[in-house]
Image 1 (cartoon, rainbow, N blue to C red):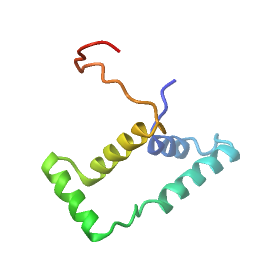
Image 2 (cartoon, rainbow, N blue to C red):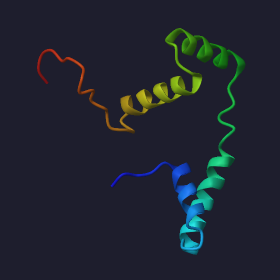
Image 3 (cartoon, rainbow, N blue to C red):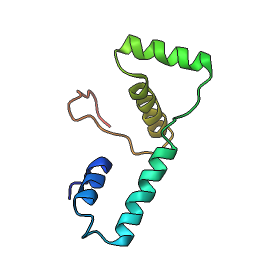
Image 4 (cartoon, rainbow, N blue to C red):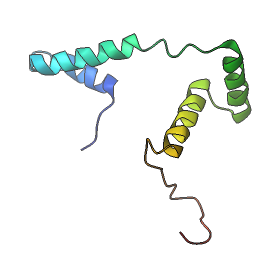
Length: 95
């Protein structure tokens, strides 16, 4: 089963508003409220913001993409997320 993005779920709910259950609508609206509450992001100290912007520019990516990448790597390294295996990378040696 393919999970649709949240904006797609909202649009779908709007298209079938007469058919959607009250409980499903309540879940979608609570999710939307949570996302809107957290939209401001994390406040950063100026030195951290400058460092992130500098690294992101050097790598040719946006600050948000850099933060997501760093956070994912930290979570994987500290065993909070399973490590992703890149199928296209070459590996030498054995496990």
